[in-house]
Image 1: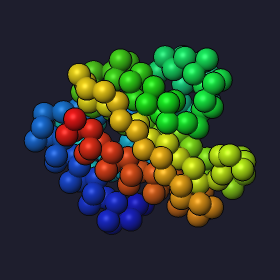
Image 2: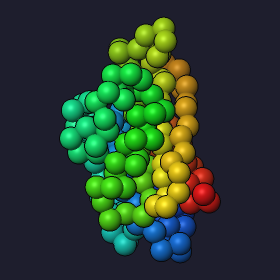
Image 3: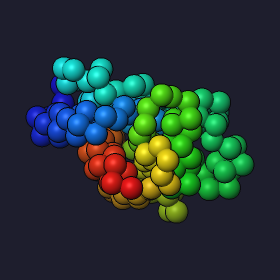
Image 4: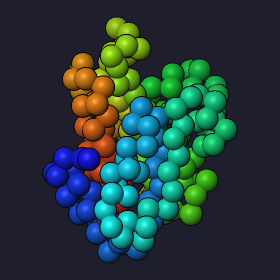
Length: 164
């Protein structure tokens, strides 16, 4: 279902999380659950994956993750501020010790000059640490490609958050 290199990276990440004694939760918008899907494609992932949230609408981001509606109104749902708030909210709404969140514009439509198709923001946070974020500009690489690349970056960001 997924490319072998992405599955191998997921397996490595699960091993790193297991070795650190960490459970992970994902809060996803533009990836629609792909982070969780890739992680749970690996046998034994239930030891590490605590839960996932698909918060595609602004209302879901607020209701399930506690992202303030005024933060979304001020910066837009596709922003680093919202990605970080999603990660913090997923931490508060789960028993995980580390979370990752993603929000963006996968395309083919929905982009603007200010926020073009392929713009993705990610956030991650380790319990007891400050959230970190990352901006990615994948360009109009196609909806599936933007989403898959976002998953790969999410794995890297989790690793970075583990070091905070």
